[in-house]
Amino acid sequence: MIEKKTIIAPATASGRGGISVIRMSGPRSEVIAQEMCGQLADPWRFKRCEIRSGENLVIDSCMVVFFKSPHSYTGDDVIEFHCHGNPTIVNLVIETAIKLGAVVAEPGEFTKTAFLNDKIDLAQAESVADLINAQSESAVIAANSSLTGKFSDAINNILDELTAIRVFVEANIDFPEEDVDKSLLNTCVDRLKSLSDQTTQLISSTVGGVKLRDGYSVAIVGPPNAGKSTLLNLLARENVAITSDIPGTTRDLVKVPVNLDGVLIEFIDTAGMRDNPENEIEKEGINRSREVIEKSNLSLVVQDANRIVEFDFGMEDFISVYNKCDLYGGQKKNGEGVFYITATTGQGVPELLKGLVNKLDIDEGQETAFLSRQRHVSCLTEGGLRIDESLTSLEEGQGLELVAENLKNSHRVLGEILRPLSSDDLLGEIFSEFCIGK
Image (cartoon, rainbow, N blue to C red):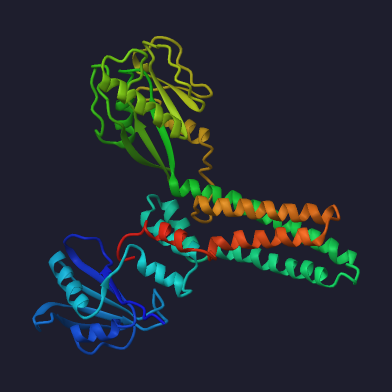
């Protein structure tokens, strides 16, 4: 057996502040902490002590707490040093622990250890990173819901039901000389139908969770000097983009995340688009604008209401926005996908945002149960497909071997959500997104 390593890293953001927390986890945590601080208090109790270097010099006077295995975040022994928020102190504490046998933790290694020690499943581990990165109240609440295991419980309920159905199907395969009880077979069909409905509902929830986690991307596009940057500044509530009467002022993409009723929407101001760019720089800006349009969920096509020009760059999903309507003498009536605004004053912008929410199909009153990732959607979709194929096979009287195989594949792929069988590559990808110390 290879002995587990003892890892250490700052658990709080770098920089100066009132307190910095340093986390250490592993089999030598208690021994190393005692060499640095002396005798520790009982588990889960803070003790004030002096942290000393290898040369017996006082590094800091701080609070230390010991979390005894298995009752800790990682499942191993964990020590937390709560010291003064000085980066030099933090570095000295870590350097001292390293000399005594600890190693610097990799990104996400504490949470990865918790997963490997069965303290949390993979979906919960992912929600830790999602909670740290959440940028809206709705995302925070949904991430906490996933972290506490609500999403995992929903998956486990499906897996438990799959197990029960597989037992019945495979038992009848093992004893072919006995006739299959038709009433039990009909019950199995009903249970598979219910399971299919549960999976479909869960897919719908996870799709909403993915949107809440990733947010939406909206490109602000249009001809030069239409007021795109002015609109972006209004949405951002600060001057993030340079505005000018000179056409072609915007060359680079300017991105601003906006929390709109609990949903994160990233608005992207693009270069003014026209068929005859004046130079290579403007041409490159237009090319980048085209790329943004292709990747965005929606585009706002902004035109000067007093100087409308033909604009067709192959967009499928867009809203037409006519700006500077305070100077416009014609009819100004909002319609489906058409809005009149004045970006300099904000006139008409609230109505535009409501139209934007409707166009993106965001249900402002809907509460997303949990945050999700695209891999969850993919696993649920494939798992649900295998369940439906099993149901069809049963209803059409096909061989139970085929039913069993589909149920087995569904079980396998749904299980990948919580605890992958071959997980090295997947775990490496997931935990590399974490910050060091978490």
